[in-house]
Amino acid sequence: MLQAIQTNITRFLTQGHERSLRAKKNIIKSVFIKGGSVIISLMLIPLTINYVNPTQYGIWLTLSSIITWAALFDMGLGNGLKNKLTEVVALNDTSKAKSYVSSSYAILIIISALLFLIFCLINPYINWSRVLNVQGDSYNQLSQLVLIIFGFFCCQFVVGLINTVLFANHAPAKSALMNMIAQLLTLIAVLIAIKGGQGSLTELVIIMAGIPLLVMVAGTIMLFKGSYRSIAPNITDIDFGYAKELLSVGGSFFIIQIGALVLYETDNIVITQLFGPREVTIFNVAYKLFSVILMIFMLVITPFWSAFTEAYVKDDYAWIKTAIAKINKLWGILSMLSILMLISSPWLYKIWVGKSIIIPFTLSLAMCLYMISLVWQASHVQLLNGTGKIKLQFYLVIFSSIVNIPLSILLGRKMGVAGVTFSNVILIAIMGIIFSIQTNKIINKTASGVFNA
Image 1 (tube, rainbow, N blue to C red):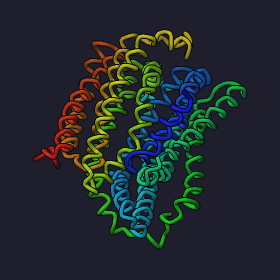
Image 2: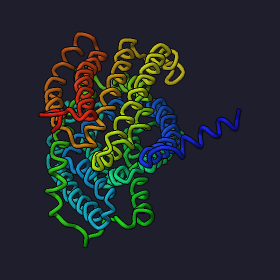
Image 3: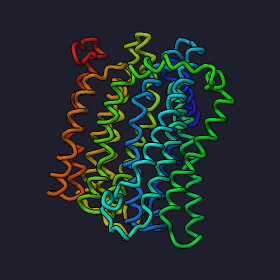
């Protein structure tokens, strides 16, 4: 029996297309790494809520969502680099790869410095108490707190480019490892802070934002001095002439990023304005539980963006078709798992966060449907992004981003916090159906017009 299992495992790891084997190895590595990350992430939530309180934790979540909008200012450069770097790596053009990486870092450093300078000038004039829907005298020095968060973000804005380099080189497991180490150190720091006494929102921000940044800096230095030395950024390899090429690829991704942020990052803001920051914590507890489904899916799908790019460049449609079929089967399994999680959610919440946070069943139902529709959509978007066939995605994301906020407010007022999530479910399900049609057209070589652009 053991011999048969060993034989099947060996066959799984050694037989198949080289591209598939590379993806399998990354997935297996990521399963163990991401599994640890999921456990740590789930442990962090009740600890951080108890370290401060549900309202302060909701403030942190809302602020981090708002600051995430600054990521738009890379103008799609990261996604442009991912596709272009994957292409030149596939063609073994190390010199051009090094110039792409060096130029991207230089551009992002300039953008990041300008962003921080502009934010320092406008921050004193923003009424953060009103933005966060808290009493003006309840949380002093919110302006300074936001400045600290934004400073951390601007640094991570640049340093995070290492993840794009790893994805383009078919090594997402290394990115996942850095993330797990950061989460583990964050967990340790929170435990130490809890023993130190009363919780502080400022300390929480420094721990939650500062430790991942330090880990990413250390990882970047080690990788570029080690296995990625040949494409490490160098000032002599900076060529701003590549900016136009990278941004032309990333320009449409830039608009899509805006739409994605409206769809995924405005929920905390809408909930804060409608119901207050405490409800943001309730919303995010439900999201974190069901996001385990998304995390499992991302373990498998992450290597495929660059793999689809490579296969498309080499005209290997047979491999693409096989990969899509397997991904669709995975979606079916994860959908069933999401439903089982919904059934057992009252028990899971009680074990996880205790009785301090009460999650309405309607919110859990909305999150279940949200994850099912999101995974369905993402399974097709990976191919579209990898092949650069994103014009239809471009149009649909613009439409969805325009509709999302008013629909979230309307459903939120009628259904409570769950209504905000149901808004996302409706829009993402519609996009997922259309993207699945486009994917089938592409792999069968029948795509034309906007479906092939």
